[in-house]
Image (cartoon, rainbow, N blue to C red; front, side, top):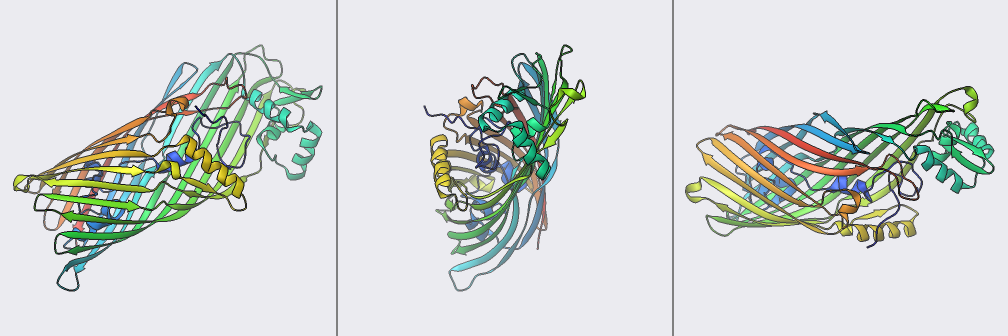
Length: 498
């Protein structure tokens, strides 16, 4: 089995960061992992709307469903997420809770009569959907009997071939370091003797603590059109304009035992910011077979997302005395920026919906294909490097088929809903990275609807796992933080017919 030995944190062209994730190309999995999104009704029914129409989520899922509208509509959805994350590091478990509030969906439908005898309705939609929410915080701590983050920096420094005087000359010229190991030299984490770098403090065990905070989202503005032909065939298309914001800050500390000679403690912090804008196209069809059954299909092109990474690192020490460090007690790197283009997975869905007798409800099921192995990364003026990344993606990622199902029961103005998502992990070797292979999202919901307005309430729950390295060593004997995130989110939708 082929397994990647490098760690990718940011600035994809860089090969030497002290911190990272066990997962290869973790950005892609995080940004374009499947989730349960959209209106409260859609979330409650597991997003199974490929063969159902009349919901604003159709603008993103299958725009043919926009053709089902007989009148104009405006609605919005607020999402309240309760995140509970348990992190385990060297046998110590730490629990962190966070509850952010976000706009889950907002949109308007413009419905008008069609032209000619066959086109019954010609409808337009403008919607915004929060496709992925990255809000997460976890803390970790443990007693390390073997090594320090300085061991990682010393490996990188010894591989550079630079002397401390060369590093200092560059640092004093620009008032920052070009990379992490130079920062560690200037910030007091390392010392130099007999042509080699060593950790400045080797007393063990070391109490290590850290906090990782993530925030941001991937949102999509959809401009969609749907047409109704003879109340039997529904066709639609949409342009999706995506906006990305992902921020992650890490605060990491090491506290040495009382017999330490040079340092009492040291720290390493970093800040990562990723922003981007891109677009995609979706086309779809829903065919009414009879009064009971619909079938539907849609296909979305990959999103072409232009991205900018920004990354900065900080490090410093609490020295026993001023002579314990070569130069300074703290240092930082320059802001490392890198631009590139991401090609997301192609997505295609097919489904069937069935109306229950006497129109007391509807059931919908579908399968969704995502072509993760064909994701791509392109950097301007770095064609050879870009081709190499695409090859690594194909080695590490696989195409998947996700399953969705939803049910809605109706009585008067009341609605009772339930949904289910079975989401496959796209990593070929997920167990190697301490990542759960598959994920299940379950959801329930209530709603009311009359001739003038509607309101929906939904609750969804999912469990995700992952891994994070405070630092890595060439020998691979570093410790990883494994975490389990349980997310329960409430969606509230309110809408009116225009």
